[in-house]
Amino acid sequence: MQRERQIIKRLLAVMTVVVVVAALKISATVTMPLVFALFLIAVFWPLQLRLEQRMRRGTAMCITFLVFVGVISLFMASIWWSAELLADSAPRYRQEFQHLFEALRVIAEPFIGSSTDAIRAGPNVSELAPNFVLALSEWVFSFSGALVLIVAFFVLGLLEVRDFRDKLRHGLSADEDARWFESFRRVVTDFQIYIVVRTVIGLITGVLIWLLCLVVGLDFAFIWGFINFLLNYIPTLGSIIGVLPVSAFALLEFGIGIKALLVLVGVSGIQLVMGIYLDPLLQGRQLSLSPLVVLFSVTFWGWLWSVPGAFIAIPITIALVIACDHYERTRWIAVLLANSDYKPANGAAKIDNEDL
Image (cartoon, rainbow, N blue to C red):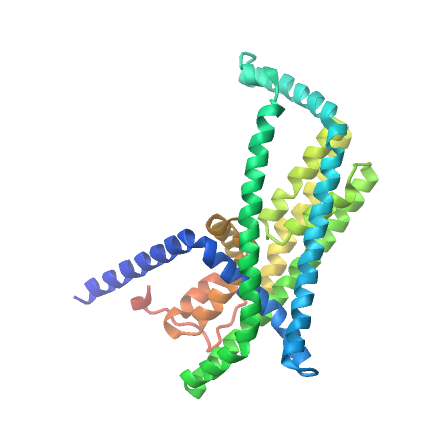
């Protein structure tokens, strides 16, 4: 009978996880902006807290919101400027694109044959353009809606932080309130460390790639450095993806030759050192996460919520580790997700057979 109860408990736990994941996937249009806003609140709340010590609460919140808008506007303006510069320069590279396509077709023919009409004819720009515009319009509409929700949740969340603490204090005992407050403090601190680590690694990577492109003579060197800086906010996978655009453009500008190979090897080497080795090592050590868990988290949350999910995958995992560490029965999960240097809040975790 005891054995049957344990099996039922395990099955219920698995079913609960599956249901929760499915619910998050279905409700992504609402849950993703909410979780993203909570992440931003955790990042910007310390600024508002310090400002409130010197001025009124309303003024402090307005300044915090203006800083938030300024950071977002700077990123959006940089992306818009880069996209506009590339779009304006696209006609100059049309002939180079055709030559590159012909060279790749000649190389690929022994493997795929020469009878494929679509490949022999080349890409049909007149057919691709409307589909691209439609896909871009859908993406802009979806992104705008998510951004509005994120901003709304962010503003309302900043107003509710102190009230939530008071509600938590009234609803829990003194010991439980202290424990939950300590957990929230750990989450906020780790979120701040996460942002600092990602920003520093992204800046170093972006500057190195920018200098590499300048030395080789590749056009739009700043843009390729900036793109890799942004992609490095997505641990591991962003480093891998960052190699593709700059290497593809090097092929387009230089053709198949030594310079394009130099760009590919150089960018791959920078991302390999910064993204595949130093990034997971530094991220895992600072945030007590296993490097394997870092990679799995980015992959899983990226599948669940696309690019925004990959961006906040590590903060979500940090919160899960701290939440599991809060209870004795789930502390073994925190130990499994963390690296070997992780120390549970209340001593070593004891894994009970009933909990597995």
